Amino acid sequence: MRQELFTKKRGLQVEEPACPFCTQTLKPPRDMEPKRFGDFEYGACDCGAVYVHDVTGHNLGAAMVEALGFACNDDWDMAWDLSADEDYQDALLEHYDLRTHKIYPLGHDYHGNPVRGVLSFIRLNDDLREIKGDRPQQRFAKVARSAGRSTASMLPEAHRRPKGSGSKKRFSKRQVQKAVEALDRDSLVEMAVQDPLLLRRIQRLLYAADPVIRWKAVLMLGGVAGAIAQTEPSVVGDLLRRLLYSANDSAAANWGAVEAVGEIIRAQPTLYGSFVRHILGLLGDPPSRPAVAWAVGRIGGVHPQVVKQHSFFALFDLLESSDPEVRGLAAWALGEMGAREARKAVEKLLDDQSEFDLFDGRKLQTVVVGDVASAAIKKFEETEGGNIVKEEKDTRDMDNSAPDKKHGEAGEANEATEPQEIQEARKIFQEANLFTNRGQSLDALERYESILPVFERHGYQADVANVCEKMGDIHVMRGNVKSALAPYQRALAICEKAQDAISTVLMVEKVIDIYRHLEEWEKALPYFFRGLELVEGLKDVKRAALFLSGIGDIYYRQKKWEDALDAYQLAEKLLRNMGAQNSADKLRQGIEKVKQQIQNAAAG
Image: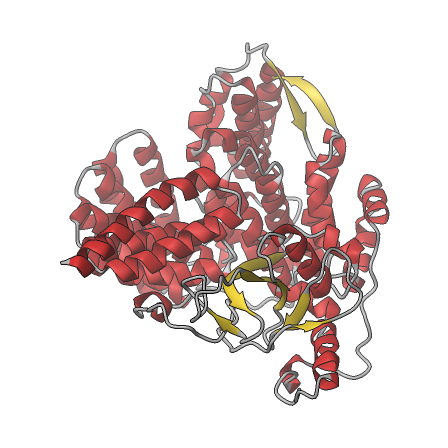
């Protein structure tokens, strides 16, 4: 979905079918065996996508199932275990005629005969395609050869499985669940080395009916991911981002996502400590607050400095929540990290007799808020006088293979080796966060401005980005929207350079909001396209649809009707594929308005 796909004005000419994922011209689909759900033809693209042809256009469900089975090389146990968007992408090409191997956008050929054929596409995610290699492409190539067609260009060397690579071993859901219930992390790690699907199988246990199994799945997902992160960082990074984005979409529908992110950070703070800021950012969503407090408490219980490098003071406000679970978990989290600054606030909960369920990493039990507050105060007393007890000196000492990241993400540098000026700046940063939470925005802004040159001077770019974002937020809060643009753009540039896709998307959205407020649509457009490119890489379909809608809005304002129509229609298609029918229906109303504008322009 690159920019040229939207800016190019496409007419209604007949065209050859192209892969919706890589835009390569497709080979005609062919008959193959075994057939299961209907009389379909099959095809495969060099990029790894497969497609199925339904001549009637009325059997799309069966065609999609057949395409999924074909992509999995008829491994139906695997196919039924996959989830749309999370494990694979799908797409449709309508008005396809097999006889001529052409797309007729108007829905009929030159003689007026209706063209109802549809090509249904499935493209497995990269890690899943590694399991099946190029076997679906090989099957299609064999059929094409038997039909006298050349396959020289169908299987380029880059897509061929190396000789002797063999297939990976797979473990059943029963085997995985048994190991999770036993908290047998070592066995799960060994299984993960052999089965690339193992993390996904553990993740699906987050939706188990038994709450104890769900909590054990959280622990094992974080533990196993942390163990394999050194050898498979991209796999764990993708998992972490999927979890974080699902948590952003809907905390209620994605139980365990935030908690699992916290466990991954707890297991590997050196690699993923910077993601604490994203967890804390979810405190603005009320349903997410219990999960955030629990995750922060788990991280802070072992690595308090990783949490304290960020805006953890926001937890203080949770102590006054009307929800006993929220205020109880907040007190528990602050106690776990030894946040002595919260002592007076926690003491107010000592007489609170409300109950809530707490999983402390060992067992799930019903506890009293006042008892949790009392335990937290005891932990504060253990840290009085600066005698802070740590289970480990620091994860950086634990991981001798990791390089010293003096100028890395916040929380990665060893506090003992940091310059005194930086340590003082971090304390001022926490003070500024506290002032922000109390509504004293001018005092907070003054402190942020005072420490920005310090982080710049020492080359702490992650801290520079954090400070700039905070300054921008305060300007927006005070109504000085235009003043927020420069610090936001600077933070964005740092995130881009660090190749932190999630942070970059979040900053892109903030810059877009500024330009929208200023009604500078032309300046916003490049940021929409950049955001779209990033969320496609993160496989965030919902945000892709939102960015496409924004692109359509700008083109509509510019009266570029056809470009707006392209963007809106792609957004509608994504929304319908992900089941967001209400949003798609609203967008359809806008599409009809654009079509009317196109007709009016043609008539005028």
